[in-house]
Image: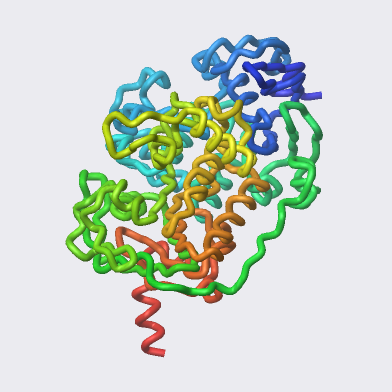
Length: 510
């Protein structure tokens, strides 16, 4: 009999007010791709961090290849052949990609590491420029860096926490080829994902967590999405109810928006034109790093370099307005970066409301306004309840929440403001199937109430579920609008390469 690659027994981890893991046992065999499944806050990421040495368990032990091991820190983990790709990235913003990979990973020179990155990127089809500073990367590009860094360690155990959350279907296919090859060579993979179809395709074993406890072990290839959902959340996710859109007046109009990149690694926006009306959801698809960040900065008011008349809300020229001015006109925005941009990590959930809301400040127009703390906490508690956020209450620090639960709170914070225009980037990144269904349902409810909704996402399934029309962004250009009834994965995939001009020519010649 082959010894298990990893064997966890009785792993328990407690935090104030919550037991993240309770007597968890898990067996990982050589060459096995093992899914760890559970809703947001079920304890999956904590368990992975214990294996990787970044969290110390309160009880339990771990065996590796039949030997008892004590992983004191990530350096120990890497020395034992354990590598991890985190859901929230561990990258230094001011350093380049190559410098981040170089740190703590190898004694090779920076030039050798740079060459290794280029080689791995070409081998696995992951587009990464080793010379780029990390702060210029999109979330999807950062994810590629983390994956390449892990692959360069030639791991015996590879832990992946939501590795495909911001990858396109084409990139996911390429990654799966890589992972299947690694498994065939004997690498054992622990795989966390809320995308049930991925788990069924890729994994040959699955441990299900609920409330920090193991509630089931199965072979996911023998299960359906529905049965996996029942094991994970105790029920199947609710079906989305869609109605025909009742279109109202124009809420957002972008006309020939062209912006030069602000840094050498950015993307120039070229002649962006789009319109969004009340009562519709418009989706923007595209491979990460094709101008999404620059467009969202321009729409949110973080970049006010747009020429006069380039961006209008309800007929008002907002091109020169900063985010606060646009919020007064009804624009609310959820960025893709949860921590640091969507929320201040060290602030409580209640105080994070103040980033985009000021109803709880007396005389907010004056420098001496007072914060009504009780009202603020009651407001945060209501959002926590409405959006089923698992947190230690309104005073919990934003960084204490799991990624999916923080996402629910941020989306809830902006939806609760009853926006006229709602812009959201990657709305269900790292969110479990039940919560994803809830967020998508809230988006459709906003649309049915007359709000104009713009969704930027790299998850095509999501865009097909909620959008009435689709655009594709590629190399800083925006495609023509496409009704959702005419959209297919194949067609959108072609347009992601910027091929809509050729299609229009072919159509005109037919």
